[in-house]
Length: 440
Image (spheres, rainbow, N blue to C red):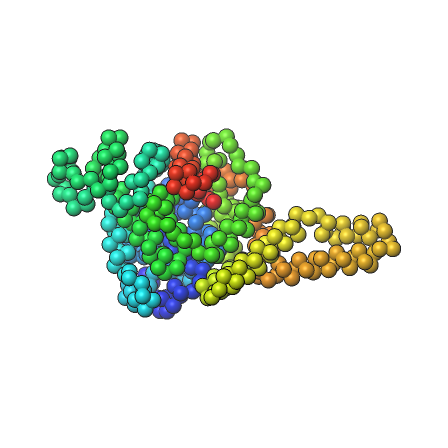
C-alpha cells in the first residue's frame, strides 16, 4: 500500500494537487490515536488536511516513514483516518523516485528526488512536538527568534554541519556559516540547537523545491512555517488563491474573540469548522465528515481543477485575464445575490403589490436580473453551493465549543497564546501581514 501506485506520476500531473508534510498527519494522529490533548499544532494540521481533502483532487505525502514497524509512525500508518483517506484515493504516497526523476528530466528541470531526500532527512528530528510539556517552549523559542534574529531562517546552515560530535562544546572549533548564528549563541542556544535549526531549514527547502517543481500546493506543519517561508518563495497554485478569495469574502465580517485565552486568537477555517460541527462530539466521525464535505463540494473542486488546467495552458495575457475575470465576476454576483434581500421572492411580491399596474414589468425586470446573475454564477460550477456552505459555517466564537466537544483540549492558555504570538510574528516578520497565519 505504501509503495508507488500505478499511474501515480500521471496523477501528479493532474492540476490542483497538494503535497503534505508527513508531520501534519503525525500532529493529527498524536491526538486522535495517541491520546495527546488537542493543541495548536493539531488544530492547524487538522485544518490543513481538511482543506487539502476538500479543495484538491489528490494530496501526496512522503510515505517512507510509515514503513516503521513500531512507534509513532506506525501509529500514523494504522490510523483509521489515514487509512480511510488513502483507500478513497484522497491521500497518496509520492510516486517512485525513478518516476519523479524521469518526469523532471523530461521537462528540463535540473532537480531530482534524491536532492529532495538529502534535504528532507538532513535533520532526522521532526517538526512535530510529541511531548505536550515541550510544546510551549517550542512556540516561545521560535517566536523569540523571529522577533530578534529572523535572518536565521533564510540560510540552509547556521554552522558547519560537518563539525565533529566531540567538538560541539569547543567554541574555537565552531565555523559559523550565518553571521546571525553568533547572536543565537549569545542568547543561550547551544551549538546542537543551531545544527537542528539548520537541518530544519534544509528540510523546508527540500519540500518547497519539490512542490514547486511538481506544481503541487505545499501544506507545511505548524512549526515548520518560519523555515518554510524563509527557505524559498513558494508560489501558491491558482486554485488555492481562488479558494482564498471565496473564504475571505465569506468571513470578512467575522469578529474574532479577543480575550486572549484558550486559542481564541487562533482562527479555525470554515471548512474545519463545518467538519467539527458535523462530528457532533465524536472524533471517530472525522473521516466520514471529511468524505461527505469533499463529496458535496465536488463541483466546485472540479471547476478550480479545470481552472488550473486552463491557466497552465494559457498562451496570452488575455487568456489569463479572461479566466480571472470570469471567476471574479461570478464571485461578486454570488456575494451581491446573497447580500441583497430584494432578490427574495417576498420582496418581489411586495414590489408588485405596491403598484399592480407595473406587476408584469417589475417581475420581468427582476427575473431578468436574477437570470443574468445566475448565468454569471453558474459559469463557475459549484460556486453557489460552496458559498452557501461557507456562510452557513459556525461563527468564530463557537470555536472553543466545537473543538472541546470533540477532543480533550490542551488546558494551558499559555500554550494557545504562545502559538498565536508565533503565528503573528511569522506574518509580521516574514510575510509582512497582520493577523494570524494559521487558519488563514
